[in-house]
Amino acid sequence: MIADAVERYLEQHGYERMALKAAMFDMDGVLFDSMKNHAKSWHETMAHFGLDLPEWEAYMHEGRTGAGTINIVSMRQRGYEATDEEIQRIYQYKSNLFNQCPKAERMPGAYELLCKVKASGVVPMVVTGSGQKTLLERLNRNFPDIFRQELMVTAFDVKYGKPNPEPYLMGMEKYKRTLSSVKGERRPCGEIAANNFIVVENAPLGVQAGVAAGVFTIAVNTGPLPDEVLLNQGANLLFHSMQEFCDEWENVFEGLTVDN
Image (tube, rainbow, N blue to C red; front, side):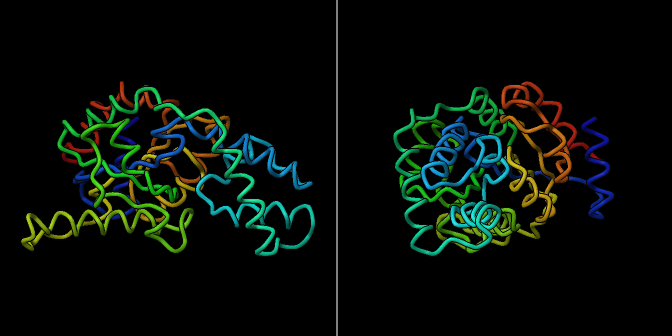
């Protein structure tokens, strides 16, 4: 299965082989079991403002900006977009509800997988639509000695966000800049291409972004959506939990690094 997926990817993109250097991980629903809190908060917020967004549908919009999600629901039910003032009130209400939810725990298997990834010589990165200012501190507390700030892409780094490929293209660029700068000395790093990376995502829009960036994209279906929703967005592989992915990492790594 893995070998076939790699072969299809290489043929589609015209690469002779994979040359894996880094793995770009989404955060909510991948590293942290936080999507159920987002879904509940969105559902209750929309109901408060006379709108309807089922919890399952929130998973479809994961990675979209708050304004984008609000306007999709507003257009569907009211026939017009929300005003800037409405968007601010609705999103603030949602943020307040989310902050009252129990703190999301680390996704089972995520830390063990990251340790395996790093031990394999692959650099773990975070590419998230989150704009939390304490993000690095939270990641370091839950995933010690895994991530580096210069190899993180957050809402502060991008203009468009997922499903636009911009976040993952930015991740590739940050990797290239970091690799070519060691102790303040500029060093040539050679060509960096999409076949040097994998993307790990749980959301349809995130999978779409990874695929649009030309990167081998692994979906981890940690939510309530059917597998087909993620596969139809172009995911190259799919696992049903981070623990399952962790258990299969050695096989995945071999499939991504052997001569193809």
